[in-house]
Length: 266
Ligand code: GRG
Image (spheres, rainbow, N blue to C red):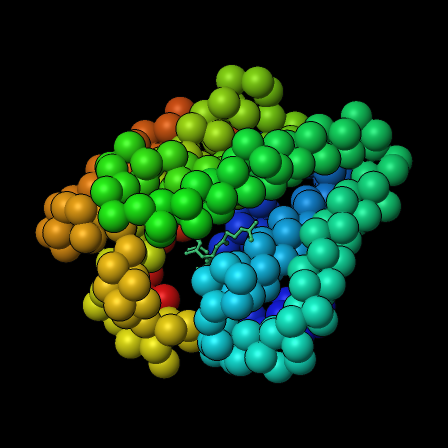
């Protein structure tokens, strides 16, 4: 668990939690008068995300040797250890929520519900299942790809923003804006991921580059080409920024972060 979690990574999802919570935090508010501490929720989603990476790298899934610049967990240890470490990280995410929001049970329940919906069979796991199925067919379509990425990738980014919103005390309209922004941002993130897989090197990415082309995997780049994929990422980023601009608080940091995600290098 420590090996995979402390390997680093961009920490994007936890930063999104904290940034979204901060949108609703007035600088004059003594903490935590208005906003509950968002840090345990931020750590919880990073634990859950790391579990998904550990399991995705297993031989029965993507079968990869390198993650976050280190040998994958099953290479460093063994398959059973990696499987159990992933299971334990998933469980620990919910343990963190139960422990740290015990004094604010309504918030704790909202956070648990948000994370469980995003990580469950309809979204993260459903998207991963469809991804595995799509690898076995040569004619995956743009609609298949959108379903996979909305669920496998965007659901967790959307949940990160919504977790932050819950902690910050956002109302329903702002929560809907955060979830919308997260879906667009997640699609843009995945398209950029596909572009980086095709254009960046393994050392920069900290994971094996060029895997999609070698596996002849259906990606935005394969379906639409590099230029169209870049334009599609820009469009989705713009949609996300528009949704964030409607938030009822100070969203300057979040907007700047979302804008920078489109030009990330790893
Ligand atoms: C095993 C249930 C289950 C799901 C796996 C996360 C995942 C779903 C698959 C990993 C492969 C992949 C390309 C996923 C799309 C989302 C994505 C780009 C994940 C990597 O996230 P980053 O780049 O990773 O934020 P770091 O290491 O920076 O946290």
